[in-house]
Image (cartoon, rainbow, N blue to C red; front, side, top):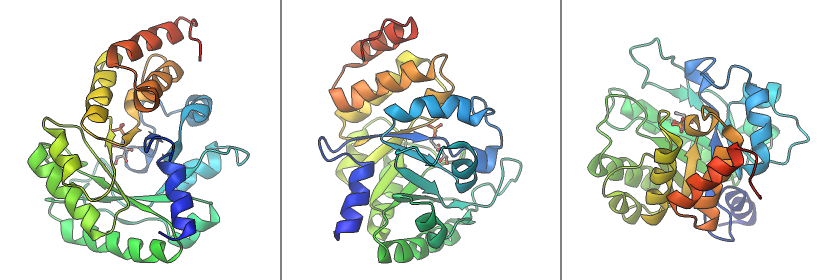
Length: 265
Ligand code: R5P
C-alpha cells in the first residue's frame, strides 16, 4: 500500500488492534428519515467521540456534521433507488471520487448486490469506482448482502465477501451468520458486520461478541446503536467488545450502568 492508502485505511481499521467501530448512519439515501435519524444531528453528534469512523451520505455530512469534527468519514457512494421501488437492489454511482476528495473522505462505501437481478451493473460500477479511488489512495468498502431476498447464510455471505475482496474492496461489510468463521477465513481482506434491524441491546452485544470471536475486524453498525433507548451507552458498550475484549455480558452491564449514568468511561 502507498502511504495515502495506508493512512486512510488506518483511520478506518485502527492499527493498535486491527479493529473498528464504524457508525453507519447512511440509511436516509434509500429510507428517508429513518427512525432515530429524523433529527440527525441531535442523535449522531453525541456519538462521534466513540466512533472510529462515520459512514454517511454527502448531504448528511454537509448539513448535519460540524466540519470541526475530527471523525474520519466513509462516504456512501452507491444508491439511486428507494425503499418504494421494487428494484431497490439496482444501485449505481451517486457520488464521484472527486467529491469524496473534496469532502476529505478516508473511504468510500459501495453496495454490490450479488445474486440480485442487476448484480452485473452493481459490480461493474463498483469496480469502476475502485479503479478511480485507488488512483487517489482511497479504500473502497464493499457493502454486501443488503436486501430481504438474500438468504444470509455462510455460503452466500462468503461468496459475496470473497467476490468483493477479489474485485478490489479493501474492507468488506457483511452480516453475521452461523459459521461466520468461514466468511472471515475465506476473505482476502478484513470483514466487518452490519447490525441489521434493531434487536434488544443484549442480543446485539452478543452478536458483536460472537462476530469478533469469529475473526471480524469490527462493526459497521447503525440501527442497533442509533435506535437504542440510549445510543451513547450502546456505542460505548459496542466499543468495549470491539476494542477492549469485553464479553457480551460485561458489555451489557456497561450498557446498563451507562444508561443509569453510572458509567466510568
Ligand atoms: C445499508 O445499506 C446501509 O449501508 C446501512 O448502513 C447498513 O445496513 C448498516 O446499518 P445497520 O447496522 O442499521 O444494518
